[in-house]
Length: 569
Ligand code: ATP
Ligand code: MG
Figure 1: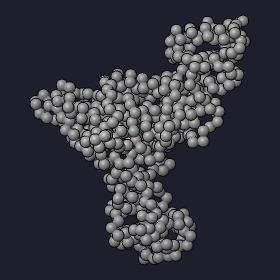
Figure 2: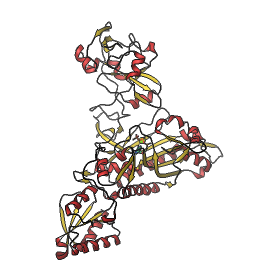
Figure 3: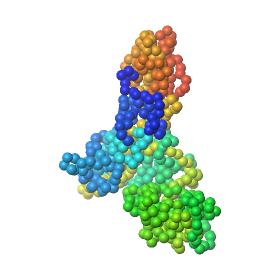
């Protein structure tokens, strides 16, 4: 491609809307442009990267026994009603009606459609196992679309579904996909880690997320250097407290606590350690207001809460909802008297150590001291509800865990018979007996992987594409477009490279060399070849890798071999 023919609208300044580096650089380097929140055009360079990632994914899926299909994006409501997810999917689903008023959605995922396909076409054990996949746009009306391609409302996903006759078959499919994912992200040049992940409320299966390690990742992972334990912090189990508290139970008293709206302020005012303060949180679980108690210095892990109090959506309660029910606002809330109001209280395991605790009195500016469970309030039970903190130990080996930020680029999931049972996807075994198919689902965020690659590979000048997914492998920059000899050499090299199958961009614009170098760095071509003064006389060009600061001089007739060798490494 020639730069003079290409649509590569680079920008000098950082677009105000872009908060994270991948979003900024993909906009600035002319890879993407926004049409609406979470929806993007892929410009030519962006599309090339996307296609390269897709092709790596496709090759690895095919190698792992996958067969590519293409299912419709628009899906009939009936299938989702059958699986029980039409209502459960909630506001994230984009719904629409046809001219006959029939309801449809834009597929956020395809378990229903693929299960319907398989139940109609598969009836014998001879047709199993089956691994079907597609690469396609998915639609999720995310609450907060942001960070460019990272969290879109329309995005590209590869989704594979496995169908097996039994648990052993499912285990084999899962293993094949786990290995294929490892190959995909390795080939994309990414530093990543598979971690144990949340499988949702009861009935959920076994699952791993593939996390690209990056500072801007939305997920936190914990991992152990001593053994191979690694998990999303959402599910990392916190050890129950070991300490025994033998303190004499005292009388509960109400005390005036002016201007003490936070745990720290209350602790300071009453001169007690925060571990004695009871953090009382009100949570909206669908239509129900529930209460969670934590020791003052701990944070709620809402995924753990959702797993013990199954519901569609969990959110911190709105102050108005709490005010209406309790008659008091945040800052003076506590568990005493909630039972009478019919509010369920879940306590974190650490709460067992809080004797003679401090909590809000559900009355503005007042707290109770010497509050004790059993006598002053009751709980549904004690559960692991808190977020693991720095310095906590590995549940497998006891070593201190480390934490890192990660971008979830893929997930593998054993579904079991959740969908096949609900939708009647069965097969007859050798004995003519009807069995339910065991399923798994496996997603890769193809467009998110593109953003994740940038998060991991950039410097102050721009993107540094991993070789395997760069939009072009080489850019040729003639120093002066007015120098006829230089231009002829550049053109000749360009033609030869194309013949050799090298993906090359010729920057033939009438721009100063500095401008062309700046764009080359911003766009992030792995190799830059500069055709300058020495090209005609001495037959030398300047060869520079994007990963390195220094360039070297290379003989014109050796450069193609050098490029080929670099990409074969
Ligand atoms: P998240 O927790 O980030 O919302 P998810 O767990 O809901 O993602 P899956 O249903 O597992 O997502 O989808 C498979 C893959 O698709 C994810 O691993 C992720 O890489 C990608 N993905 C999911 N949602 C988005 C999105 N809104 N924009 C871009 N990629 C996404
Ligand atoms: Mg996921």
